[in-house]
Length: 265
Image (cartoon, rainbow, N blue to C red; front, side, top):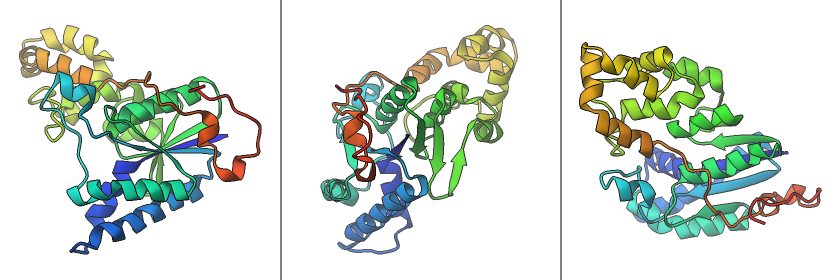
């Protein structure tokens, strides 16, 4: 069996940005193209189970502990058109999940780790979120739909210089000003990768490079509070209650197979 989890906002944003149409009809055109993308992803992977995820309307727990935090949001026109897209997914027989106080990253981490933890089969994530590449360490694969590329541990190490399980620590060090993740000033992607290669994790970095008198050590000491916050923001929650069963995620062509106990049952 194979679980396919699709990052809905990642698809919608990319299709919106690629659309050259202006005017009130743009959102409807984008909706059609989004649906085509969902169909292509399903066709490419032929999963037995599938789930499309969307961010909730509320800021979630990260915004509660750090008001400056904020994920990239949908264009207002697409946000207004989202209910229509959800209905289109239902008509396609695709289950979706959207919770007011939850982000796609935590919803995905919850469903993927539970699926893999119970040895049900493969798990593929269609997303471009860097943080979700950490789930490769649990056995998932990441599909870049627009680049038509499957990403595994080797891809992560070649691209960012860290192992998949180190991605949250790497992102905490690098930060992301666009999302309100402070990181450590003056520590870029290559330096962060080098530190994690040498010291393994954030504690190792702080106890190793963080005590040195050089510029990196000084930067780590000055930004220790910001780094601790960034580490919290880059933690994935895997204990959300989704209110779904595995059987609900089973696609129609597999609906008459053996019963699969649901994680929400």
